[in-house]
Length: 146
Image 1 (cartoon, rainbow, N blue to C red):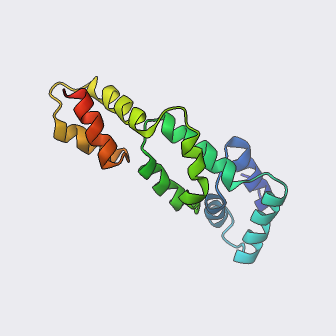
Image 2 (cartoon, rainbow, N blue to C red):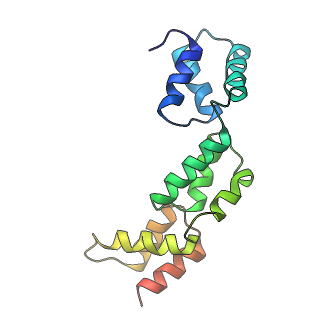
């Protein structure tokens, strides 16, 4: 591990995108003696150098979670945990190739492959746990269980 806090942050960012909030948490873990103002100054410097961007992080997170078959609601909750307002990046969901209802059906079809006796209730619970809204989930269940 690097002894310099700036090096710690740049090493983390070299591996993958991180949110500002996430990097702040890592600074507290690896450099507990750092004051809040010093941490804020380091994080601001990373933004100025364009090494860290919450927008790039949000793009990466949304793309990754959509690929995993997660619903918009669950992704928005995760963005909020990273200090990113979901309304600020809502356009990224609209740019996705598939609609939310298409992703919901695909997630349900994949889930059904390994099930011996699936029921509508279990399917709805699964889709709710993935963060899909109720209307898309019921529509997908009706489509699959005809």
